[in-house]
Length: 154
Image (spheres, rainbow, N blue to C red):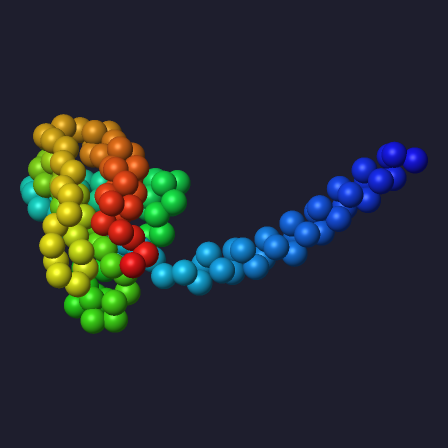
């Protein structure tokens, strides 16, 4: 007799979870991003290598921000003025990569989108591509803490 109750309870729980799942996903996807991640500026003699590294850096940064529970969206640098006017997000992450293979440097700045005020800067280099990608791993928890401190979701 106890077994049918457990099965019935489990199926009720699954039904409730299944019903809540799409609603929760819809609600979270409808929330505006907290941070716009700009495509990194690249500068150096190894522009092709830097461009590939910039793509990998941005993808890793977005992944790590999501893991740190920061709602982020990639944005093209040329769209910044229109995004600022639309108040697309309260903060921006602006990255730059310089150098040549084996001697890359990276800078990642957390800015208030409206004012352009810099809240934090994270740097790496000179070093190899793995070191630059490591910055994309290390910065997001610190960014999440800085957003909390700055009063995210105002």
